[in-house]
Length: 167
Image (tube, rainbow, N blue to C red):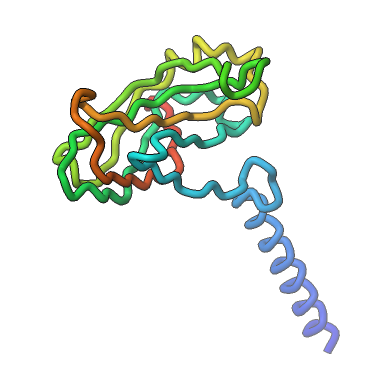
């Protein structure tokens, strides 16, 4: 009977340890691990942003992968998405500093896809020492390729960015 209780105690201890270890691996309870919602850009609301975590700022990844998961563009309007690292200005969002990361154009203009932009020079210009978590964002602007033509109904859904390091 004593060996059965000992075996049960060891199994329970192992199970508790495994659960605690799994939570730590997944980052349970960490402020930087909050899920970020997708952003929708439209012809009426052409700018969106994603916060950049303290961990991402510390790592200064070389590449950002942006996934356009949904496109609604019945007229086939050619459009591009411009990406910036942005630090809120001292006079509010209107005076925010924007550092270009890059841009991409959907082709065909009604198809979703994944796009990779080199972010290393933008992070260098940002300056890691002055970057405070929570104040830096990845800002995305939707623009028509031909600015002379009027907007048609357009909607893009962008998933949260995936930050990658060079291998």
